[in-house]
Length: 472
Image 1 (cartoon, rainbow, N blue to C red):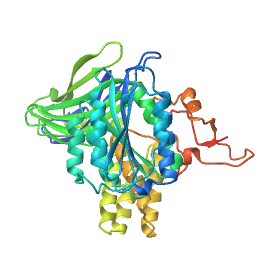
Image 2: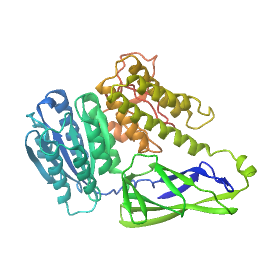
Image 3: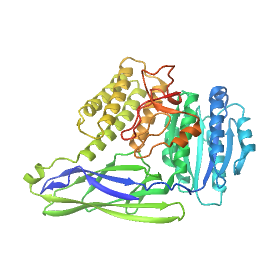
Image 4: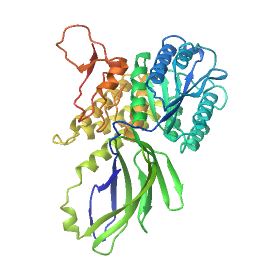
């Protein structure tokens, strides 16, 4: 795994205090074309009464899709829950019987989310083989049976993180997005919002693509500050554990070709001597998976240069770090706006997003990420206008929550399928989902349908070569 560090400023003025942003950038190696780690997946499906109809049918079709794509070295367990928990399929290599069992799932009563997740965890842990272990938890409602405390549920997911990750998928308008995001965050997985049943195939395709290309697990970064230097915070949304040497940021699994950025903010006191100055060090730890499983530790010193005030004043801030900080601030503004809206202050929420919208709108037009900034600004403006007009809804809150979560975790993804970083979705994957993908053409004849039911229309990420899509 390639690792590098850059600062918003590398020249600090002598005998002056400074606030410095340091950005760690990690680039995972490409996933192998042939062999991949085996997958041990527990699919946990909410079959409560509110899932009846198109939502449950979409979840079952997506589950069958997953079962059909798993290979001979993979294992799948299927758990359902309503008032009670049922182990529909113990952990096994999926076959036709598994697919028929998934298709036969029917709706029931309440929502024992904790019981379903715990049974899925138990099954995923049963595998004695090496590989990637994940619980995929689907729900459209609130946890109202069993363990219902969000902090306790997130804590359980965090405790299991080193052996089994947790990914959550929320359906419709009634689920608790804060709970599902907290469980995925603590569990080292991802969280998704399926606004309509048509979103489910794309979500499962994205998750399968990620699980199939895991190249490193249990990725973490410890931050060891030098004497008198203070860590003011980590701008990203990752779980952080306390260790004797300093905080440890838990990044979860890394996928082939994936790029992750972690931004830390430091306070540097007066420095009395010219020359190199070590602020801290990042200690990167991860386990590579594939043909060989091995643990790695990489130490990266954070060194700046102390110069006279005139020389420090002439430097230009690092544009890449500055832009990353702005985008993370935009994500933070989303969460703050959600909190304000939850308290009934829609005007305050709109004002908070508008303030960041103004900063994003002033992005350097020559920046490689100018399109990303424009899209982020547009989203913030749309949310602010909705709040100003008083039409803020449960669906919009969920969209904002997932947008904020993904941005602060470095997962810059579009609705439905991932177009993030350097990873492109393969044509084979697209064909396996049953879609023919083509650039959106407003002049083309025939009806247009938004891609995998996405709303708003699917947006691209810079460098992917894709714009919008329609189904042919």
